[in-house]
Structure formats: structure tokens, C-alpha cells
Image (cartoon, rainbow over all chains, first blue to last red; front, top):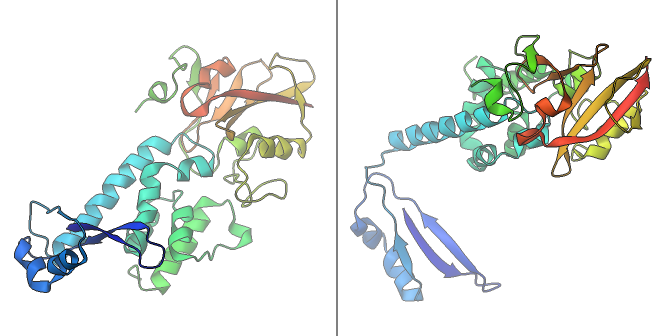
Length: 159
Length: 138
């Protein structure tokens, strides 16, 4: 992963850009693609941060799974005793899950298949959808079934 | 993890577990004697409410709509049923309902119902402290 600082051309605010390279950790890849030389021409400072292992596409998927499960476990351990849904959803690990974006939606839906839980806030935030009918509002088990079916209809879960 | 790990004032002597774990209902529902829904503002709530209003005032309004009014303390008072509402950082966190013998009953999120001898038993940690008592005629 290459992290670089540059400036927005519209407002001149400093922004940080992250480039992820999969399959090889050699700096020469960046050089061959011209990214580091391009940034160097702009006079920005580039900081290199490489993973210690190779990252094939399979390993990227596994990495997302691992990250999700780690965050999930942390979230559940901190929130089982809570009743306020906002308090449950504002826990940092849950917010990080939301930050993982659409890639985690199938993982969340798999969780709902196994055990109804307060994943609805995350699902709605990521997908901008909510098919739960008013008649099922507050019914955690029914809401979970609705979302699981939504996932199957979208091809995100096996039917 | 034991319940006593989650609540700093809970001990083996001041509480008793009275139900299995379930995500079906939460403490607000249980305080209102409902075991079928997870009560959440703007989703399933006894008064019209924004989904973003998780403040203590909103839960007070919710229980006012169920016949409760604010009162000064949680002392057992003949002919009345009392609630203890907890809050932390301006959010409501918990509601406990008083039993006829003066003890209290609470649903701990997705965990079990418990009976506890005092409201202090569930104060502290993520639950904050009791910020409002309410009562209604039985």
C-alpha cells in the first residue's frame, strides 16, 4: 500500500491518497506504473507502507473476512447488554464495519441468517435500502428474515 | 462473560436471573411489560419520534404516553408502579420497573431479565445512572 499526500486542485486542501497494489510488494511495481515518479514530479511526499505478505485477490477476500469477523466479535462483546439502538450502532467497531462498505453486505447477511441481531442500521447505511415493512418494525426476527430474503433476491446469498 | 463483568455494582447477592437471553425485546419494552418487540425511537415507539432522537426526554415522553408521570424517587409507594430511567451522555440507556415487593426488574439488552434489589445495582458502566423516576397508578 502506498500512502501519499497531495493537494486538491480546487480548494488546495491537503488530501491523503492510498494506492493498494495486489500480488506484489515490490516498489518497482509502483515505479513501473509511473505512480511514484508521477507523484515525485508533483513534488509531493510519498510514504510507503507494505504488507509483510503477498496479497493475491484470494488473500484480499480473506483479509476482508478476517477484518469483518474481528470487528464483529468486538462489537458483539461490547453491546449485548445494551438496549439503545443508537448506543449499539455508534460503537467504533460497528462504524468501522459500515466503513468497509458494500463488500461486507454478504457477510452481514450471512450473520443474520445464523442469528438475528442489530445489523439493520449498517445494512441501511451501506445499501441505502430498507424493505422492512412497518408491520415488522421492531420485530428483530422478522426484520432479519426480510433482509435475508433481500440478499437472496439480489444474489448476495445462496437461495 | 458474566453479568457482574458488565455492571460494576452487580454482585452475586443483589440480583437474580429470571429469563433466558433473547433479542426479541429490550429494557424499554420490558419496562412497559412488552416482550414482543425491540422498542426503538422512530421504529417501534409509543409516540411519534424521529429515529435520531435517543435522548432521555424522548423516553420520558414515551412513558408519559403510557400513563406515567415524573416523580422524585424510587421508594416503594402503595398503589403505584414506578420506573427508573438511566442515561449517559444525554442518551437514554436503560429502564427498570419496580416490582410489588420493592425490588426492580430489568432486561439487559439482548441478555437476560434480572431482578435486582436496588437501582444502584445496574448503575455505572455503559448504563450511566438513574436520571429520572416515574410512577403511575396501578
